Image (tube, rainbow, N blue to C red):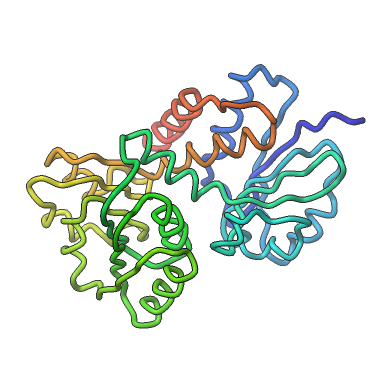
Length: 277
């Protein structure tokens, strides 16, 4: 049988992806000299043909937007975690030719928080209501014992977040974005908004903040993250999420565990630093 040793990240746009740096660092650390990891610009329309063109040297794929939902009908099996948010970011290509989809963003968020000592929280706030927000809710369903308040910009988004809460088994209350500064008093705040969206909140960080998980990684730190750290709060960034979800992908694709977290984080930090110089 042909050795399975190829993997890649797919999406559009894809040139900015840090995934190759992380996965290649993992292969180097694990001594997997034959393994390769590339990036491929693939949109929704091209995805079926791309998958059909893969041979038995392929072990797995990482998926970014806009493919996380589009891939689901093309898979043989989808994990309960991925089904819970209708989003697949990981496809493992098995030796018998099956395509198995999973979502490592959700356990990745939980693992990143656990690394910083956050294993349970009595309440949380989520800023934003996009795809990352639903993954954040799924992770919070595992660790939040009380209510999650989602701060959103429209009644439609508010309704979506309440529906996700019902589906994921977490109590979600919604509030208008104009009240987003109130979120910062929560013991755990997850910011899932695009660059610039939370900048105006930097001046509202309380004197003794809890934990902020801001999913952006470039530019970093965000004004909110910088203000949070300056007040002594615990700050996690997008690189923490990216590394922890990638570790889980490496473990699934290679069958080697635990994945080399430290080596992958160092590679991600180096790749980000290279972009700013």
